[in-house]
Length: 342
Ligand code: 0X9
Ligand code: ZN
Image 1 (cartoon, rainbow, N blue to C red):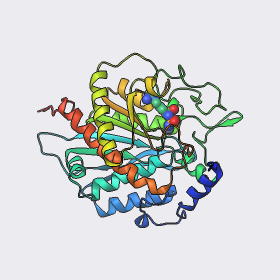
Image 2: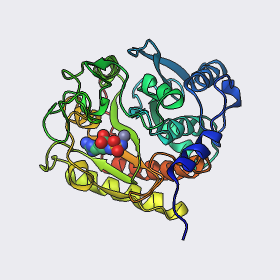
Image 3: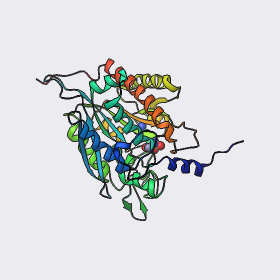
Image 4: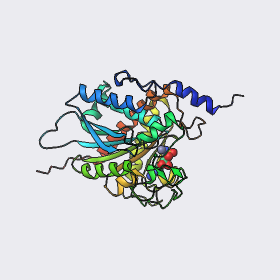
């Protein structure tokens, strides 16, 4: 009988990490990358595609790293209508390396893929992608503790806040902890952390102007496509639609490699959580289609967050298939109808 060795898995995953000095133009999706390479790569996209890619600066993290994103757009919309915006948040939890890897994969594919369903997504929507919302935590998983989840701002004797418990969505109620040493520490107040505060401020400022009607947060692991709520078993008004949209995504994602994803409300299928970004975007900003996506591996997987780099591309492909089905379904249900202001 073969037993799984966790330390071996960590070591193997570190062998697939490219050196921090790797230039962005050498980035592929067969390895994991340090923040500097990811940002250098984003700079190269901006330089190479001045009419399609624009930088987004959310601000700085506690340790003064930039929190960056990009907007990908097929160009100026016609004078009478504006494209719907899709926002993708990745890397809120430091150790979930597949999240920034798939966030950057999506970005790359939107710009470079020739597959019809991806080209269609790229031309139909404006995309706002923040691949590493928690850059301090991400950096710490390379040089400090591979299993780090939170931010790096100290709170008394312990370090870090769980950013996905720090948003103003029934903050510090269910499924979160007031103990600064806990993995799901809420932070001392809602939006107390620069990372969550700056993301909230950016979204508040751009939600209407950018017509952000869909918010997606990428996490790992356990293969679940979850929608609100996390903080209650109460069902949102468009529950039936969200379930249909989730089911369409699950079917499409399974077609490619047979990977089973589950869908349902976060509260029902994973566990209760409060203060999450997706619930906040849904309740506060009225973004009607909001999903937290737990990518591979399986819920029972022993690898936890140490997904082999060889799986980045297949996870990205099945996710893009799911996303295309999701957006088609939501569009069919009338969510992205253009309303003319003039
Ligand atoms: O606990 C979390 O923040 C997420 N799981 S993870 O293992 N990636 O940490 C789940 C959040 C689910 N919340 C909602 N759907 N609202
Ligand atoms: Zn997570």
